[in-house]
Length: 480
Image 1 (tube, rainbow, N blue to C red):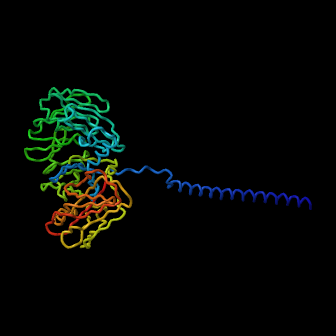
Image 2: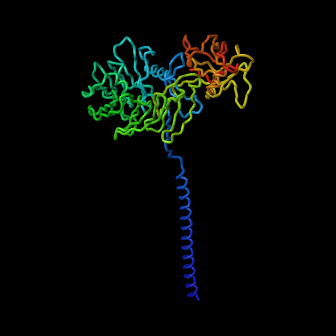
């Protein structure tokens, strides 16, 4: 009996042990599966975790450099050709002023003028011109840091051309051609003994996009010089009456033929040409040959996608307000150039009267600083609005050096001509100062220096009358 009990006990212990073992294995499997699920959840969470963020890619802005003139005073400005509001433009004087102040130069600001931007928009070349010196000083500035990177002098300012990356300068002196390496500070006489053209031709020459070659045109022949090895490497006769304008990527030259008044692209690799278009004036292409800006037969600036032939709309602000404009250089860059356009914001804007809304258009006081040149404040009294005013309150005392005014109703050329524009205005400031301003220019600096004020009250004193309406309007004002 005790023996059977012992056997039963052994069997029971064995079963219990087996059961515990199986249970442990099952628990282990369950824990393993749960652990795997937790790990999978963690891995899934990790795969979308923002802990490793990729750097944001800066937007490349398609700036176009313009020369403009409205009968009063010429100006140069950059315009964002993808901006629908028309407010993303920069007067080059703002850029030059900022760079000049940053370096605390010891000569008058008025002696500085632009030569060109680098093709990537990171640097700019300025020259100093004055009758007091017998040479031309050239400065290269970093547009991100405002710092002057290089400064050098050349003996002859009249015939000079600088490369797209601003690393080389080619100029003439006493009939000889020289290149100056900006970074290496080395001057080298060019071996162009086969060239029989005049010194003036250097002023119409163009660099290759990589700045390694130079194309000089003389009497219809293109002379291609390799600046790295200092010798002529190619010569192509095209047509006698021509002018070279640009050297694009893929080794192509843009030129104008005066024989038929058409524009062509010449492939330097095979010597073949194709007509670009029958532009009236001044086509300027992006270096990648994707976009062109040009003047049409009416003198209006337009841009087009070269690949599709389709027009690209943009806000042609300066033409709308009576400026004749001409494109000179594309600047496609990620550099923040708008920082040069200082603007002091308003906290409150009120007006003595406002034209009632019409056909969905608002003429409220706030429009004068809303960053959109297609909207405007228009006074709302009967007649021309003489004596009506608008007051811009900054909320605290600010230092104002001047203002920039987009006059009239600038939403279209017709609207600008049809409505009154301000001809003379009275400015009143919180410090008690007043001044009368004849609005002849887009940008107006205060003649007696900066004004410290918490508000500006602008009163209409005289107007240029519109062809159809008596409403006096101002589209956009900026204080700097």
